[in-house]
Length: 144
Image (cartoon, rainbow, N blue to C red; front, side, top):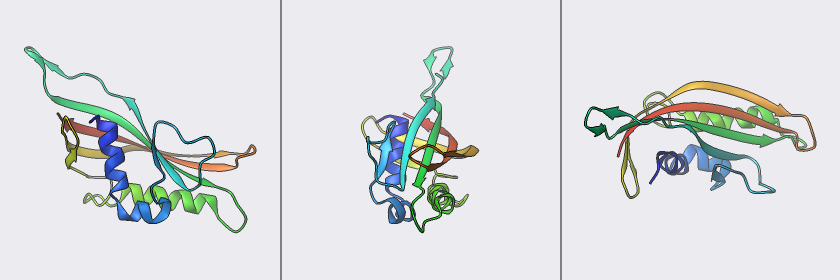
């Protein structure tokens, strides 16, 4: 399992997230006509970590998690995107991605040593889609 697949599995395991988006959590790209709200998990960077004898077995990755909400009649897309992003983030005690550490599962196993948000941004697409995106970047330190 890759670290981004581990983060995806963690997001899908968060009941606060699935209450808002069900299973609409995607890796790398959204479907052509997605149902909103939804979440996307993307690996931004993953530099190698070495010691004098080779790989250290400890990695660090920057993972972007986007919460999407579409502007439709009667729905505030900013509030909905912010709610989904807040559910993904959780509190700093590890109820979401913030402060999370533990086994991400899979084969080969990925054990997250720490996951911390380093950035948060909001975008609005004023074209036909009229979608609000709340992007959060997380630095994930893990061991394989």
